[in-house]
Image (cartoon, rainbow, N blue to C red; front, top):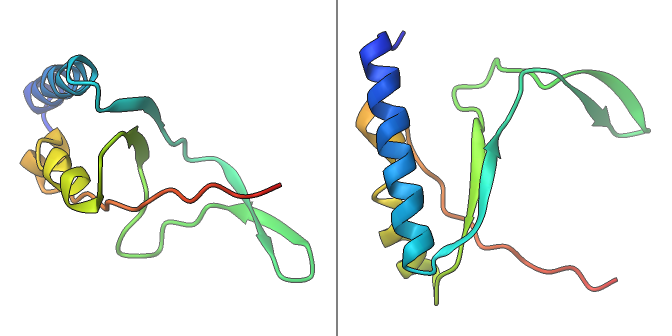
Length: 99
């Protein structure tokens, strides 16, 4: 559990990191934190309560950044404040869907 000071520091660092990405032109979408409520759709169109957090890792939020390639995106992600508090960051490319 994070202390109040840790939470305040993380919020301050998060804001600074986002402002840095915005001023450098790397911030495409500031993202959002994900809530704890939801539904999970299983094969056969079965809808159940979820999401479930039994797994070792969960997605807590997302940020969409602009980068020339995956290596640049990973380098930008090294500034993410969650890393200072034991969290990790996955960098995944976004693929546009043709519709």
